[in-house]
Length: 441
Ligand code: SF4
Ligand code: SF4
Image (cartoon, helix red, strand yellow):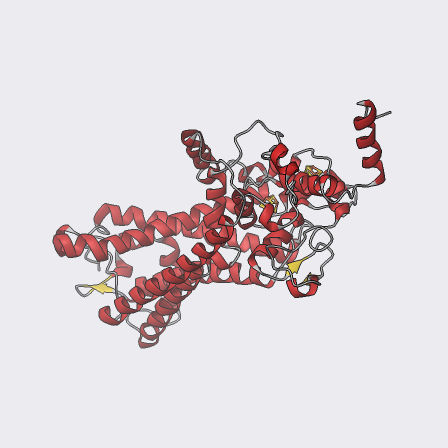
């Protein structure tokens, strides 16, 4: 018998007690937003301890570049494989985020303000397109995550290092992605609207992945209002909401932070010609001081922008893979220069390139804080700094627009001008310039 076709529509709290479900959601959003905001403010406070840097000129250029890099994934896609993998996750995530926001807008604004009929957004042709697009981009999201997991734990390219939190990052996103499809499948397999099963509707097939799962659920007896399915569905719904809340709360406390800070770092990027180094500010006046600050000796000597750099790094290792010094077997890895400083700034155990992990207390013989700990000789070795050819390949390749070379050169400036610790070869060059204006004398 031909099934009656009804208008496509989404019942937002299907099989969920509206009062309990809504209260749970609002509380989760409230708590996780508060935790996230606290984490972000803590990071901003750390950056504000940095020296000044003028990075607000040319706002239009900055905004255009921010759009090209963040929404267009320009630099990310330069590395084809890793770039496509990241783009699948990024665009999938963005679409699911927008899709969830549409539900929130309908539930909290348009329906309460305009009424059940006029305020409904997820209805008719719009809802059909919504279902198709969200299933497609949701599939891209999950595929990108599976690819990333395979790459990180099976292929293991040299440029990636694994930390325990990486498993959390991939695990929670996979749980959110796959959990969303399971919830959709259970809903399609069991929901009826006015006594008509949603599964029998032509439009239900547009959510093709959810529909395929619904077909599977019905085949194993979890369809048509099965009591077991009606019990599993809310369990999944609440854990999915909780996982999304935990994801939000952990944004500034995990590798997820790059979702927030990489676009920000792109906006505040250096607009000088490529390779131009920042001069030492107020050099003449600084030299006259009793304790001049020339170059970078501690975290506190970095500008606020370079401190933001540290939190924008997602440990992708692209800078390391193009570094000629690293390729030649030198101790230097531009990635580890940034990640070690980032660990120190956040008060995390510091992960070294050779696999050792040390806390600040273990590095700290004289009670210095993260802000006052001399960097060279503790977190960074002078040998790393002098191995750099300042070729700028790392800066060119970094999708987070991090300025490694400025950090390296400024630490070398401190070694040269304050600590007078330079390798023999460099000393000869400097003496040649000083005495005969000829580095090759
Ligand atoms: S600038 Fe230095 S750290 Fe960066 S790629 Fe070149 S040699 Fe490596
Ligand atoms: S500094 Fe840039 S290129 Fe290097 S690991 Fe971090 S984000 Fe990737």
